[in-house]
View (cartoon, rainbow over the protein chains, first blue to last red):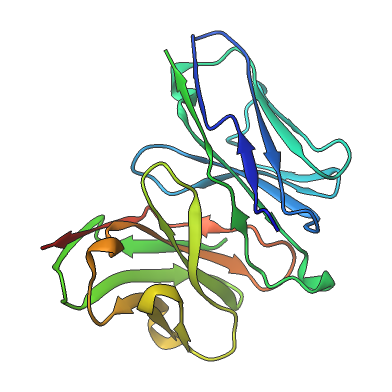
Length: 117
Length: 114
């Protein structure tokens, strides 16, 4: 068990550019979550996958944001036409559904910090 | 809808003193409650969780929390603070059915005074 892995850990970009973050969950976990955390705040839910299906999206996820989990394993979060307000830590978490023996716990990665200049 | 409120965005305690971080929840269904710790530029690490079993929950690093339904509280305590406890602490709630989506509080930054 290598834990949840996120890449890149840090990304600096200019306003208007596109960025993509990748998350590799714990291998046996079928659920994957994305959160955004701005300075001094708690993490805010963005979206959630069960296997390859995106089952819930927050209103925080504007049209410039898109997330995929094409084969039910790793996931990508893309932000198009970045804005300075997108600067944040993007956290990925995974879990095993309770119906399949999961504990109800989310396991978090180290996060990807985005700075938009 | 579920929510948690963490009272006190900053808490300072002396090394060796009691740590008390406050969390109150709001939930229309029986909740699952969690405390996570976050060190600078790192992800979140689970300290402990309440999932409707014992109301007094023991976690890692000597922390514990007590679920009090009558007070809708889940305060985090540690009898004796250590310098390594300095970090940001988040209380979070989820429901006990469906997915494991967490709703977080705004966090409490714990500073330890030598």
